Length: 238
Picture 1 (cartoon, rainbow, N blue to C red):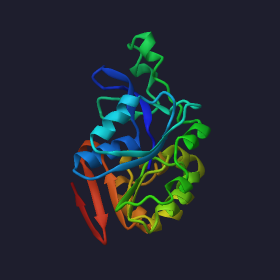
Picture 2: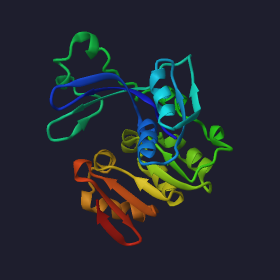
Picture 3: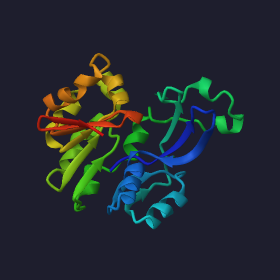
Picture 4: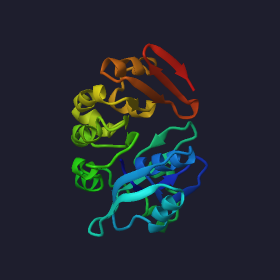
């Protein structure tokens, strides 16, 4: 359960790509398929999401019956740029795309600040009624949809929660996140997420803080340095 986006990405070596399929839900489904699992997606896509990407998902064995296509709204678009130190700017740093031809530069759109569009491209809790799974991955969710979505899948398999919208958490506080962490099995934040909404907390203290907030297991993603896993007082790096 998560977003399917249309992305524009500028890489650190100067190359770039536009109109590429992406989003938490998209990549989680592909990851599950590549790992040999049986995945299905629940998402709403807009009129301009590439149909070929949905066909390819199906060919890879991903269940697509839960995808609802709306022709009356555009798809959510995201832009990123990467720096040589592996840091990522979102939206893309204008200085990182100044060399991109004008026609493609115009494709570096970012509509993630449109709350109406963000909500329209996520399934509601009622849309998940009757669906079953051994595990649920909940991708980038707005804080206002956290409780509704966690409640919809709770008790129907393991729940893995990716970090909610970090900019929203930075603006409105972490209350919505703290409210749901005791009700999920695995929390999957990244160090770049935490740098936005917990800028004063040292990286070494993040996992312990999330456990204090009620998280059972934490997978702290650290970019090219792998991840730090913790549960039940044990902690290890992969």
